[in-house]
Image 1 (cartoon, rainbow, N blue to C red):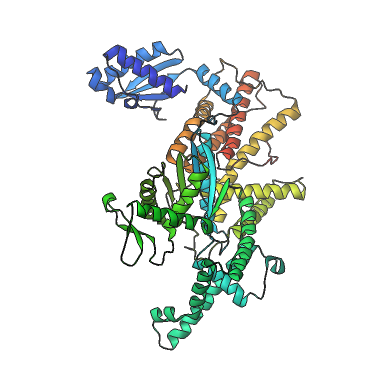
Image 2: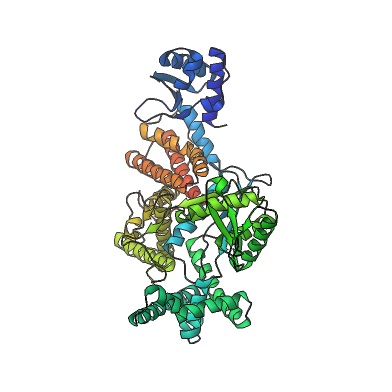
Length: 601
């Protein structure tokens, strides 16, 4: 039982004993005491005045005396207006610290066969282009959420839906067919997703040339678009694909395989993976069947032109197209089909879609439609709606080839880490292979942390140079803290300094030590809060604050040079616990554990 729960239970008992009232647990607020006041935990007294019928100060005094008598480790209390501040004994905090040091799963709940299952969809790439900076944010958020969900007691299935059909795919295929001259990843030396993406850009360039020529002859923009031979050929190719034309399907399969191989390399380098991958080419027909069944049951309606719609006016929305008049599907249909296949494969309790905020309306509609179709989790599906990511120069455009390629960005980060590390001289004595491993870890830790520390619901600007700074709120700062801690224990071994593995009781704590212990013990609450809020940023910023507090403690307090063994053991226990939490942060997705850089003490 957490200390917060113990205090809450004691407070409920106090209200019952003192005022004869049974309060609901939610009426009692137990929170960390503000840093400008004395105490560790605060109980808000104001909600209790209705039952105590006394002034806030008097109610707080009575509650404080009762709780202190009931809980032995309450050292003292004071009442500040309507707030009861409780101070816990130093030995309580030392025992809590020792429990953390022994607990390899501090902050993590157990997961077993009876645990609820959360499915998290992220990535959702198109097979006409490589992954870019926007995909990086999506993948890191989705992967981090999956780790947080596991830490909070869910079984998790990480899933991806690949957009492998549609007119955009045919544009790349047509460009390769017309101008590719049989180019392959092997013949060009390019990753398959890059190669296919180049042809997508080429199609757009040629299409714009064609429109310009038609407009130069007097056609309006709209007329030129209708007259475009290139776009007509792309549409014809899509019709052939849907009809199962052998040559078109074989080309589609070949080019998609190039892209999948390229995606796999990027995912591996980024450190994300999936338990199950679905493909829209397989799900859209399932969705069409589900819509037609819903039509037969009267859940949807057909218009005069043959198109099928959902009337959402009872939900405060408008009508939503589900099938076009020619019977072809739309994105909503495909999402319905994917949901059906997933529900067949897994007993889903909670479904989370990691998709940008431009799709907020789409997922409001999807939730209603899935609920009508009988999916148990439909009404409560979570659209994890995140903001867009831009560069200092502004937005990116795939068709114009102005996106920041994910592979190029990761390599640029590694190059920057290499240059900065050489300048700082931190890796002297390392082999080239060891150094490259460190450059990669620093670079990708910087990228991941910079993305995850931002409130996911906000738009953000990614600045590669700022993200890799070794000072400030960055991944390398946290990694360097972890490396510093590992260095302490390595030096201890070299000097023959033994550590008991625990902080002896009875030792006093200075302010910085006390603050650090409290932060360490609070980690499970942070993980729980991040899970409830679907926010990796909560954990990322907690880890930064923890690292910052640790470094202040480190600079003000000798560790290995401390002659008093009792104090030294306590401080080594602090070091070990901070290092383990930073490493554990990798397990919840923020990816900030540091390399074994040989820093000095």
